[in-house]
Amino acid sequence: MSVSMNGHARRRRRPAYPARYSAAGLFRRGLSHREWPPAWRPHLVKSRYDVVIVGGGVHGLAAAYYLAANHGITDVAVLEKGYIGAGGSGRNTAILRSNYLTPEGVRFYDRSVKLYQRLATDLDYNVMFSQRGHLTLAHSDASLRTMRWRAEVNKAEGVESEVIEPAEVKRLAPFLDVSQAARYPVLGALYHPPGGIVRHDAVVWGYARGAAARGVHIHQDTEVTGIDVAGGRVRGVRTASGDIATPVVLNATAGWSTLVAGMAGVRLPITTYPLQAAVTEPVKPFLSTVIVSGTLHVYVSQTDRGELVFGASVDPFTSYSMRGSLEFVEGLAGHVLQLMPALAKVRLLRQWAGLCDMTPDFSPIMGATSVEGFLVDVGWGTYGFKAGPVSGEAMAQHIASGQPPGLIAAFGLERFAAGALVGEKGAAAVGH
Ligand SMILES: Cc1cc2nc3c(=O)[nH]c(=O)nc-3n(C[C@H](O)[C@H](O)[C@H](O)COP(=O)(O)OP(=O)(O)OC[C@H]3O[C@@H](n4cnc5c(N)ncnc54)[C@H](O)[C@@H]3O)c2cc1C
Image (tube, rainbow, N blue to C red; front, side, top):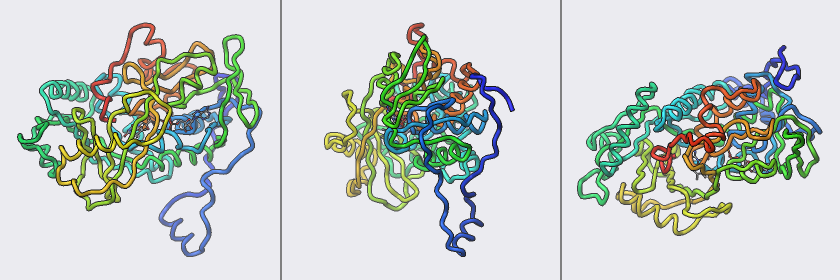
């Protein structure tokens, strides 16, 4: 047993999983016709918790999981106004990579990729992480120059990344038009073999299940409507289900983060934009890598079911609306066909949108604020799903120790006043 930052005794608990997922278990339940128990059970909202996390996306749930699993802090509530994964975590295109531009960014996202590699085992939940490689196309000399720069920073940080020629691009993605006749000829690409895709819902559910098994309370349909601050420190939160006293509140609400921070009187340099995506009907597997074109504002990957998942950059206006637009799919289709003319007859199945909390330097804001006990894990823009594991791990460590771990020191809110931005626009504007 040890003592937390708030002086509360904490104990390392053995996880009491509701059920262990295994082939043998599947076989046994198949024979006995016994139902699987629920992944987690609902609880009544208590009047006090050691830690309250606002937002039931991958960031909030991962922080709750690592608080319990790594630090034995289990008196934790995750408050979600809708259902878990209702925000960006259930709407993203699930691309994971670590080929960023700054050394701070590369180190941070690389840790996340490493956590993702063992996540299925850690959570006993198949998150379907497929490291199929990630290609960022260069259509101009300027893009090639940035890619060489990125490749060098990546290599210096021990991350696999290299600039490849059009012929190699064609070998990896035979359906791409790399001819000089293309409107935007491909001059080369940044190839990042560890990049890939994951099943985002499974990540959210796996963290929720793992956290709940260790004692965390997950309250869906529980909107935070106010935050009580007195004497410069946080005292609790108000919800439709009653007031909750707590010394620690973590704001993990992404697109809504400025609204929640505003409840504590904290201003964040964040603007919320919608981001849209679309998926086609399933077709035979033909695309084994993720392909991104910054110039054409489009990226594509193929799921294991055969659907093509397309994304782009954020809508050109701020909004809290999560509706798709015809303008988006028209532009998207045109750009996709410039890259892969052979897809002309493939039909789109659906489109959707989510909210993105954009910061001026395309890097997150993590750590303490001017209100003691009120922490933020926000500013995830269009690229935050991949950071769920490392952010959860780091914010849990921050809450447990009272200090930000070195890996996130560069991402503090104070960097904006100090002018110490972590410029990631060149690596995060389109290729999420
Ligand atoms: C279309 C699209 C494609 C994307 N593609 C990628 C990608 O390929 N790779 C990648 O890494 N990232 C991608 N992203 C970004 C990524 O989805 C987000 O950065 C990430 O999911 C943020 O996770 P989160 O847990 O911080 O927030 P969210 O998942 O948005 O969760 C925040 C939660 O807070 C809840 N909430 C808000 N206000 C309150 C309140 N007052 N009280 C209680 N709960 C509240 C919301 O309901 C929401 O569920 C994409 C995003 C979109 C929209």
